[in-house]
Image 1 (cartoon, rainbow, N blue to C red):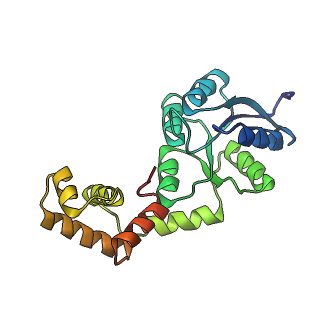
Image 2: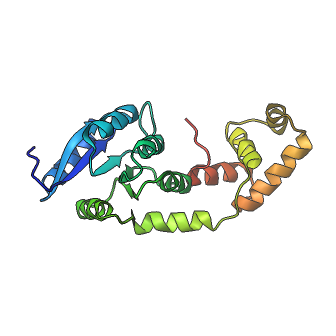
Length: 211
């Protein structure tokens, strides 16, 4: 790969080599762009950003050692003007909000077309933000929903792990009755009528994860 003067210098970070190579090929074939570094995990991405100071960093959301949001936070702590793009297979509501709040300038899913990928890199390099229509729709839906409190979220995550009301109460130091109140509030806020529905909606929105 030959780096031309004036090219947009790009860092790629993804733990799947086949993804990195595919994205790198698309960008390196584009006039005025060059991939100057590739990282296989989040910690390496932070190191390589400091070493190469790229114009734009394309980061996977889920990576070993440091997740994409943590990478954005660490990079921006040292380089506040850093331009970062999240490129991921995940587009749950919570993931989108976390990434944008951390300072990512764009959020793309990996089924994006090469043309949109290139356009996004150019836009972010020019100082603009970029969110695909599908992601934007999810974000709007998320931020307009009623907020779930931290305690309700804790109950929800224990619920998703298969705990009974008594087990949730014991874990959080609250009574069974209080747990039932939180569950009732969660059902109303998630617009569901059962635990199974609540867990499915929570997984879809990125509020919980089952590893």
